[in-house]
Length: 232
Length: 275
Image (cartoon, rainbow over all chains, first blue to last red; front, side, top):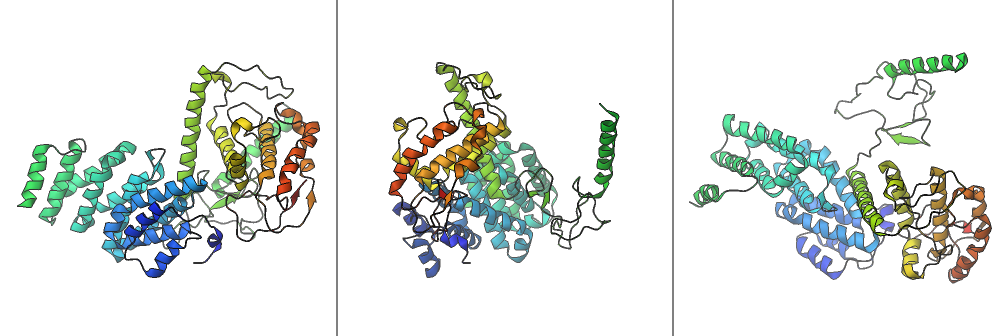
């Protein structure tokens, strides 16, 4: 993958950022880590690719990667007003988005990781404290896909869907109310009409329906209903 | 209007009508060659619906060359990759934020004396709300031009070396004020001059032949009368480079890149010299 971007050199990240990356990227191959920690230069394009690839493999990582990306974007902006990392990350994200149906067909795990990652990015990478408008429709597209009948049959996908809605539902609704309505029509229909849903899936759907109805908050009674029952 | 003109317009109008049914671009029926250089044949499949291959991906050309543009431009004005979209969004927000600030400041600051200008642009103090440039498209374009200039090593070095309170008018480059009303030419000229001046702070590089290019003449400074008095006129600009060149004695070579780049490449290429 050697190309002209290898000529691009900036100073190495400060120690804090390095530590953050280190803890986050445990389990990467040794050579990948070396790539990152060459003190004389850090190739941000490569870093964004490493993070992207890792997010697709590791769901735990994809949940937290947003925070790391945010740190790197800030660091680059401060250092030289650059945009290389963010730009490359977003374009990778876009590429994977285009191929998402294929990814889903190949590996549910990877698909779920992707959705988790893109939602995480939406949550953390803000532009002037506002979510990135460019990501609103793609995120909705992903969630709508998860709300399709075939996806609702898989607990993995339902679980991912409700988790994301818990985290970013309110922001998404603010960004585009009508599409959120559209999504919830699907969820409601799924819950009421779809045959063959597992009871866990139905519970998750019911909870998210109530959650949104309550203004993206769960009342204490509802909380008791859902969360103490599960403990039993 | 003369009959001849009317006739021409009718012709052009019906020509347009025709072409609408053919290709995606108004002028495609006039062009002999397509964008890839191959001769155009009248294609039946060219129409308003998308041509797609088996995978369902769009096979239309991503860009057209139109008479107004210098080269291929993308199909829609908006760039379609997320990286660019987010950058554009960010720039738009920044410009709007600047506008708010400008409006707020305008109320508090005492007005400066109106400058007289011989140009038709009619200089107006941007601090008066009414006379501020507010067209978003214009502001965005200007901001982009400013960003190109600020996104250079030269600018970085300049602001580190010369703090604002030390700056002298005429000698030190000053970023053109995007909120003032200027004609397009006047603005573009100001930007050019500003960037030329910034080159004095270009970082030294190892090699580069000692070519002398008379850049000042290339800029066509005969049009300088359009520009506000705070920028050097032609006679002054002969003097202005003098302090700049004393500064550049510390540089090994006077190198000037056509396109300023933020980060220095490891293999610097030969650049033309600044006079």
